[in-house]
Length: 257
Image (cartoon, rainbow, N blue to C red; front, side, top):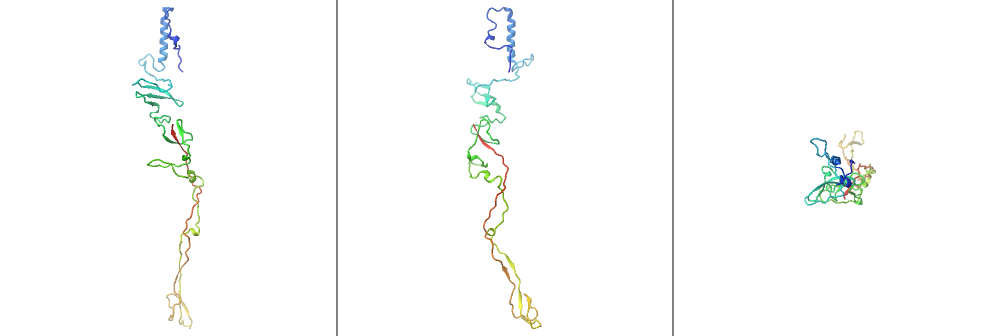
């Protein structure tokens, strides 16, 4: 806080009195006045006794209670509180108020950067100052979907119903009813049983296609193919989800007040 040698108030401004004070005191009164002015000007201006005297070192603005009322065509540069922070504003000649401290930076509290009703995702539990957290059941435990048309909400199952601990595929053994219906083919072989003289008056058996010694008189068995009975019901089967545990980061939706 700036302090001065003399407090500039109504009493200070009455000095020197109109009458009753010696003329010799006049010089000291002038020095007091010059010192009072210098101390106050030096708050924002350079007074070093060189060519830079009078130049601004800074501009210190007191906090305004609100936006100023101006004459037509005038503009004003001032500061006012936004939340708990003193911010810089410009009110132009058209009466439009612009927060200058939001230019070139993201200011979540500025209604000109984010108009009322703007909705944004935040990766935090509470909404920032000036925003209201969406808390309806429609958006709780829901996934995001990108669309090119109008936005909407929908679906029934919440995100954690299908994603999370205990949600992945496990092994499943097919039952006979779940197997596709199919057959197995088994190739068999046969023999030609031939009757004839084998030189000893008996009967001999030779492989199919081989008549053996003597003269065959009858084929009794020939080569054959055997087919097993069909099996399998062609029914469906299911898999149990046990550990489909996808990583996630919770977000909230908040609307600009």
